[in-house]
Amino acid sequence: MSDDLDNPPPSFSAARKFGAGFGVLVGVAAFVAIVLMVNFLATRHFRRVTLSEDRVPPLAPVTLQILGALTNDLQVTLYFDPDETLYTHILQTLRQYANASPRVKISTVNYLTEPAEAERVKLAYKLPPNSKDIIIFAIGDRSRIVRQGELSEYDTSQLLAGKSQSVKRKSFTGESHFTSAILTLMESRKLNAYYLKGHSEHDPSTIGTQTGYGKFIELLERGNGMTLFELTLSGTNEVPADCSLLVIAGPFTPFHADEVNQLNNYLSRGGRALILLPQNSNAGLELLLRTWGVELGDDVVTDPAGDQGQGGVTLNNFGDHEIVRPFGPTQNGLALASPRSVTPRSPTGQGSDAPQVRALVSTSPNGKATGNRRGRLDLDRQSVREGVISVAVAVERGGLRSVEGGSTRIVVVGESYFLGNLMIENSVNRDFAGNAVNWLVDRPKLVGIAPRPVRDYLFNMTDAQTRSVNWILLAGVPGAVLAFGLLVWFRRQM
Image (cartoon, rainbow, N blue to C red; front, side, top):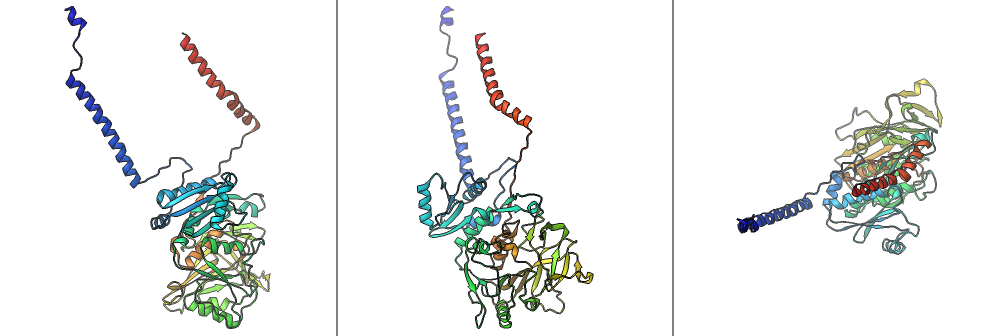
């Protein structure tokens, strides 16, 4: 009996030991197989779910479509100071591009701490010596540059109203500019923009003046990949056959009759034109625009709902058109200096091939158009028109043999200062210009990428609250750790 107690039989037989070991082995193998299958599926069906409140919005369908069409590697260089405010927004957006396409390669260069790498980038892309805070997109030997200053919309309502000296960043427009840069690198067709001169238009060659159009020209060249030429229609000059876009920006002296005929001929054969006419313009294009279904008012438009003081007005009553559809009822709308009315004419008596004219931007129902005679407001009540008044229209007429597309397209705005160097960064002005240009040159994929909101978190604390936070950080947290350590020591002594 004692022998049985001293030498008990084994609790597991050899068969049971083998079965237990085999079961563990199968379990481990199954776990490894599940992990491998999950990773296999994850690489082919990538999904990112963000649970934070300040989540990153998904890329627009058009962006995903363009990224899916990439056949060559796209090198994106973030040549930036990481301490800049927009750096995080830019990097997050670019990582979304890389996640959407394996052909997108991202590299970052801090020009402050990596001088050798910064110099290499400057030489590779032929950057000016003072270049900084830019994003470079390159496919092969072709490249496009997007600058930090192009990537924000600003709330200027408080500044224009004289209530504040600061301008608040409202939204981030990086995706529209990044996708535009990528598409221009992928496109094979060459786009030429002609800037009309000879009638005291805005100067396209300078960025330093408030009314110059240097920033708008950068938008055409860098943002849209267009080649810019200056054009005069004096004498026998015609609008060139390779003109993809004709820009008429604030002419203040009259056009001659032969110049008007040249413009009409260009439009009649399917031309594309961006026409900006401020209320003090004396260009004499009223009759030409009437033939294209547009009535240009000799007036000044105001709107109490959008009055920003100091002569400015912001309108957010957008029409149902591709150019303005992404904006919706934004807080600021289109910031204008002193617009005139631009309205669709009545289609009475026009044939089926008549131009289709749609309002882009209008006042609220409280808008007013006050008659303007010889540069002075006419206060006669009979000259005041009230209600919803349009200040910008889009014109399209199809069925024509076009230079670049399949129809004539015109955008007419009763203002030109809103795209000058001083105002182009205000509110949605730059995005309106970009959408108008892309619609005119028939790039529908780039019309409609809405800006992303930027959340700012501001904490205001009193002096007493600040002192309390300091004591918590300096004494409370270390003290809690010390107390927990003493408690563990005391328990072990017991």
